[in-house]
Image (cartoon, helix red, strand yellow):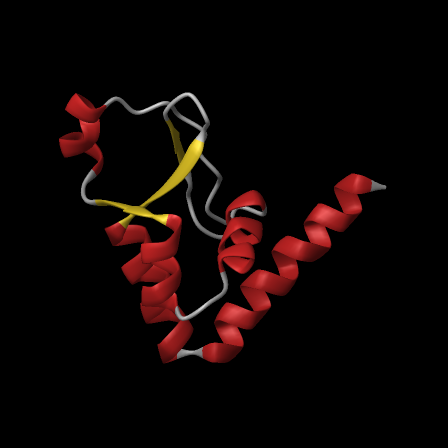
Length: 94
């Protein structure tokens, strides 16, 4: 499982992490609602990098492409990954 990364990335370090996408951009690529993408980042399904004083989420283009490839190539596998992450989250909550 991919673990969530909460990091403050300064603009000069963005070259080290690759192309960063805003939440809306990543949502359009993945064809999901922004709340879905936020939930996926909270559950560790996709890495989210926190930037700026407000802690806005940024997503690496490579991570979005990897999830998109998984999502389109094998919907069952992607669904299982999402369900497993949600079950794990619910178990920790109890």
